[in-house]
Image 1 (spheres, one colour):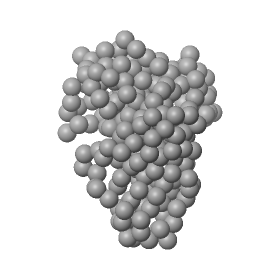
Image 2: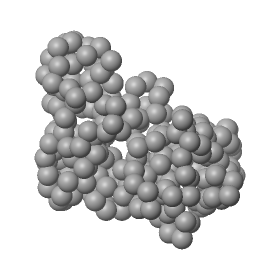
Image 3: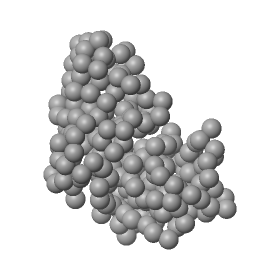
Image 4: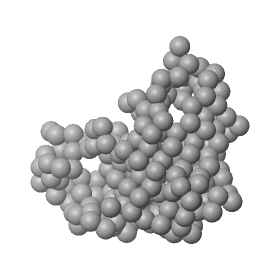
Length: 122
Length: 107
């Protein structure tokens, strides 16, 4: 079935780095833009970043710009999020999310992973 | 950035009730609005896209309406499985933004 599975979360000290991965299955990954959306404990949803289906376009929320980098390897059917200079306010569940339409970057999210928890704490 | 404001923040209702949640955008987003349902410990689930289009597999008791800056999500007859948090989200322009959520709880 159509699925996204995140991995790589954990506990990290402020200022350190972490890389998240998201493995896709059940659909043609290279046809879809993919996003990261996060949710701090007990809080609402925050869009973080997106990469186009071919990797040519990337956008970031101001809160992570310059610290986070999104990338994808379509041959490995995997999405990545490199998170540097982590702050306590980056603590959240990070969801890998598929964009609604193929070959577009609409920003509506139809397939969500189960999420991976990132905790930034000393 | 476009701000999305939902009301109410919490809604107490009984099984069988008709429930309406409102979402307002700080500027026009035409019809580029989605609604999601999230249950505890789970990822959100897309219910409605383009303000009023029902995602496949979503029960027909869910409906969406509105355009411009004001939108509503209606559940025509609340079922036990519907107690959850509901989020609206605009995708008219980057950065895509969500409302703060509406918790639908058992009365």
